[in-house]
Length: 635
Image (cartoon, rainbow, N blue to C red):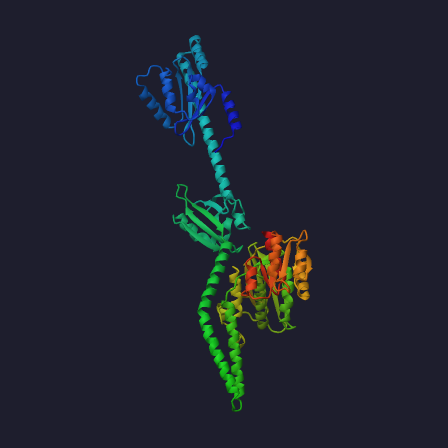
């Protein structure tokens, strides 16, 4: 890593002010840093105090200059000193140099290898001790000896204390780094001892499960997680305590979140279990949606051939009935042929529903204002109910806008309302409640005051073709709702209450984060009525609109400053919308362009436009426009 030269200069200047000599050698026994007193004390040449200098070269130089007195075998002496250095053991010693001065040598190893050594000239202290011995006739030799030994012991003790303080500082820093890493990890990390008591936690439990506490050290497993959740994990915890690790995925009863927990045995003498828990709710929702997509593909493969042959048979039957009706038939025969025609049409309708269930479908989420959605849905639902049945709706959702597939949700809720209508008697009531569950799910419950689900319905109501309505039911209503909910990554449950039946839907709760700021939009359409309809939708969304009835007029207005969008119909009189957008894009490459049309996706002109710009299918809805402009704002 590059070093800050100013900081390095300040550091070296500070070390040079120290009266003691200091040297630091790394794990390879090469000099990392030293101060000027180190060079002056031993008379070292410049190359021996330059970072990178070898330790054995320095020892050899000191031997050759007589620092250690007479040495018989210099190489053997140097090798012995090098081996002692490689041991990296703390040490304290006092020795008299060849020049007669006495120094203390205190060495301390470094955590990464190598060591730091401090050399102190204690000649004056030694002379004072000698003077004290010579002049203190009242002190016995034994007292003097003890005093000297005590002084040496104190110096060793000071060195040991310094080493312990350094080790403590290193451990404290290591613990702080470990704590920082665990707190930054988007998961709950904890340790439970053999008694099931938490001894460590990274304070992330409340982020994983919002209604739990963060500081759970000292709490038991059930106290920290709650009785219901702890019961789900007790077997895994017990197996891990016996030395068998495991990974378990479960749904938290209190929050509805999907959690994956790993249990790892603590194989140290302390014992216990390490826990690592992560929120996999979105992953589980995506898995559920993908699994439902695969089921739909499989169902489509199985039914497409049968549906084709069945449709051919219905066509043949219908043709034969038509020929029969042209023949002279006995009395009452026309009623039979008419009933046969109705059965054929019913079979055709059934084929259409099967095609809807098994055909290709994707969830198209867009920002949906919940209150506006209900304002649109309620008139449609109430129109299908007789006057004696009331529909009551409660919206308890805090976020004003959510990411939803409004079309699929409207179809599903309408299906549930119609089912409830068939189940209740006169003067009945249907109640729909929307609420958020722990910032994870949008839960929608539909209750009615009917007789409730039978045992058979509770077991099979979500199966295709199961119905309790006899010939009046296809058995595909709840199945289609279940299919749409699963495609969105949600869940569906049916149950009975004290007053009737209940259907509960849970969809992923995703607040609409991106908000489209007011835009200035050039709207191009040669049909005034359609242009006025789209204009009203855009202005209701808070945007400003400039209208153009022809492509020529649009090309002129496209140069207006401050323009954000051009939204054009594809079928225009003089110039098609694709050519218009191409012309505008050439002049203003940064301008947002989009098309709208009633042409099918297979039309060549629409396909050409879709390769470059968004294309909205007519009839355009406010949700389509909001999604288009919001996607641009989010980008």
